[in-house]
Length: 464
Image (tube, rainbow, N blue to C red; front, side, top):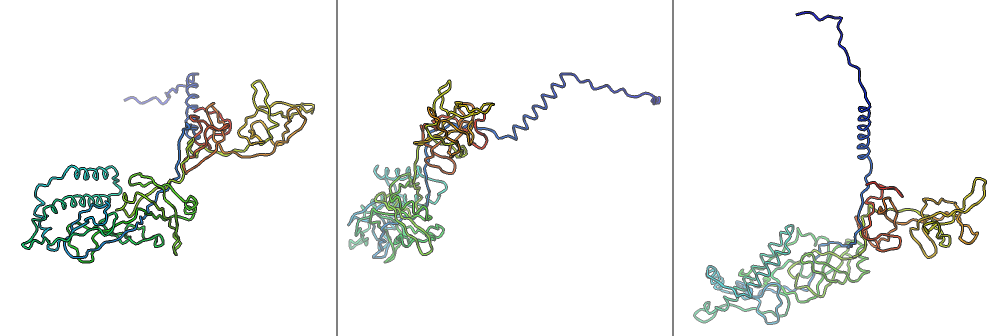
């Protein structure tokens, strides 16, 4: 193999730059800079103004207080119910029976496997109860399933018990005695088959611990169970007037007391009603408000804890995000100093200026009016400056610009630039505000505004 001649060197071609490469490099650098600036700059996003409403709503879990009376057994035996839970019974109506010997219980068990046919009216009652539960079922409130199970069982037992009672002759002994004691209602009311120890509570008995459902125990009174003399067998709610008690802070308590009556939505069925407001503060400083109703007690008679929504406000107008709202200062001038002039008949003022020789002259300067009172206009500071003098039309009177005031508004971008528009806020929550529509210097429905007012400045052109 021949050795390489050390006198031979590799030829390096010179860098051949042409105009095309320079243009490509310049374009590449420009694109990189634009991309960098795009991600570093704040993006202006528009928002279409729409009509809407906001409600100042507060959701609470309340405790239902009713006039409730626990009825106890006067004899021992197996209890069988004939009044459906949640229905009204009158004085003398049959509520339950007590089977002293247990023969009725044996008869029920013996006939459980037999064929039983319910009339259409009874089937409709069951169907309505099932459909009502399905429509309002909330997976997060699974405990409602047990209440539903209890209600359905009560309905079925009531219907089947009437059929059995119709054949009571089969239970008679040789002496003709069935040993079944019939117990009728001593007073009228709504029948409830559960007890929880809250029956005698009043507003003045309220404590924060009573709202802790972990410590709450509800005992269901079950059909065909053995009871002793003095055991609770059912409960009567005897008055249509009832209350829901919620725990609140002092500010909300004062607001509710000032209103006297508050519109309440029941989350269970979306029913609304007006409740009369009263309050109580216990020794621990806990504040409780009672909302008293004169109807609908029967709908919630089996519920002790009820979720409600207070409908305190409901303002309707133009709905805008709070991020679009900005506060801006303006010059305030007397109305008599604002006139019409120029080629386009625009609003403006006669501004005193000076020529090169120091002689005073008057120049019409167009300005935008952003709001007004009975005697003054709010003008922008785009052209005018503090300590400028303006002349009263048809007079030699001067006014030194200096008085300022602030307005709340948004930036309208209908014309392609950020144009301030004053808004009159009717109501706000954490995210949105409702502003008065169709004002002289304000917004109209379908106007486009800047979503985030901090991303623009006055009269900035909008490219996005």
